[in-house]
Amino acid sequence: MFTNRREFVSASIGACLALPVASSKSIGAEMVPIPIIDTHQHLWDLIEFKPPWLGDADPRIAAKHDIADYLAETAGLNLVKAIYMEVDVAPEHQILEADYVLGLIQSGKTPTVAAVISGRPNSASFPEVMGRYRNNPLIKGVRQVLHAPTAEKGLCLEPQFVKSVQFLGEMGKSFDLCMRPTELADGATLAEKCPETRFILDHCGNADPKAWQSKTKQSSEPIHSVDQWKKDIETIAKRPNVVCKISGIVARAPAGWTSSDLAPAINFCLDQFGPNRVMFGGDWPVCKLGASFAQWVTALKEIVDGRPMVDQKKLFHDNARALYGLG
Image (tube, rainbow, N blue to C red; front, side, top):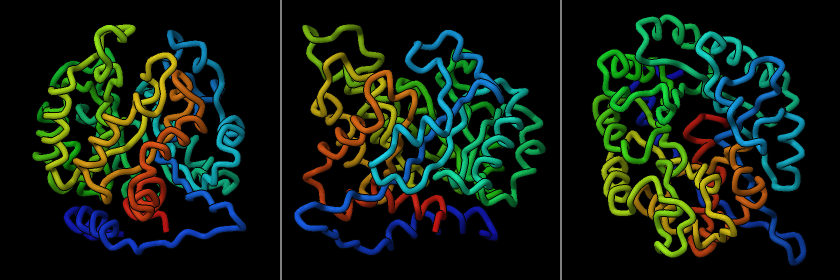
């Protein structure tokens, strides 16, 4: 265990910077696929609990998606580990969800080895509720979805919210930023106010691939402008305690998309955060709104194909192993 929050942040980033270069192995003429750690695994079996927002969700994701479905979806991709990501359950089900995923991890029968659980940092009871996980190494962090209708603009800068996120840093836990792309500047300010807490920016800052399309090709209006998003990504990437998760973007991909539709936003994030502060996330089953898990992995591999192999391995595996202390 880390003895203090500064040690936690420094060790996490330092571990990535010190990663060794791993050589590729071959079997005959075929390359062994890069091992994958999925840092964004969603599951809902609808028996233990049902996220309230799922009732209005697209039919492609509204049905059961449990661990058996996940294993089938990721078969053959050399996925070696996964980190469960909370699914925005009702507040009264947060402990139930945490207990559910802890049982899954402790069973040892799945690739799920750790979790980021749900929390409401703007609640005065947050330190008490989350404090029970202080010494639990399987709980790596907390997330509250900040683009939900229930999350008003500026919520993450409320005094209680800031205080709670600072408390996470004291515990050696991280906070995932999953927010509207037009509010990324608030995320950068929060990270500045909590320098000893590690942040993970989900879904390339919720970039909308349609923003890079010409007006004649746009099926609907993008949710942000390219210039505004780039400016805010540049700002938040300057915060050394923020890591970017390359995930989620395919769920917003336009019909008939190709990897070239996703590449501008992904490459910008990779370049701004650098090879040591990026991680792959599957975002299954939400990714099914645009692609299967395998199609998303294939597209991302195409996009990063020209980058050094050591950087590709950091993206898909090594950074997550180091940042989450997965061994």
